[in-house]
Image 1: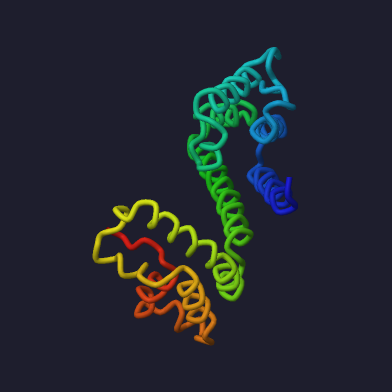
Image 2: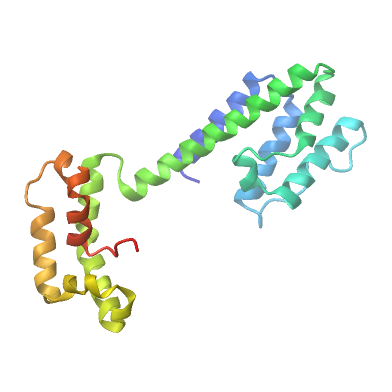
Length: 211
């Protein structure tokens, strides 16, 4: 597990504590997350399975519904079993609908924050955290992308409308030189990403245009 993932999970559990989530409920959710991360190495059943008491039964049911019917991926998108709220009400001895609804909303918000954090980290790792890093990575992958498009076009020219065939009239070597020169010509990042240059960038990179 990455450091960022560990920190994000720790932040999620801290938020659950701030929401006055009963420890047994937090433990069950934590166990579910472990099952999702390592299904082969973690018993995929609620820690309260087999225990007596209404709260334990509700926790086991919530875990079962989430794991076998809804899914933990959906859990992190905020699609949670209704039994989590019922387990919270039972463990907290709360009959106030407003307080249970507030806790449920807080849980969903915490899950969304976790998912946004993980998605942001993923994008930064793949595409770069800054505009400069993104441009550098794009420049590094350009030759491979241009070669891939040339290979695909030569194998089957029908993948593009005839009006776009002129993009491939020059040789692959010429296109690679032109693409690298245009991309590294010293344009500012503002110019590179301005709407007026979008078509030029697409053509330079030989990315198939939308039909």
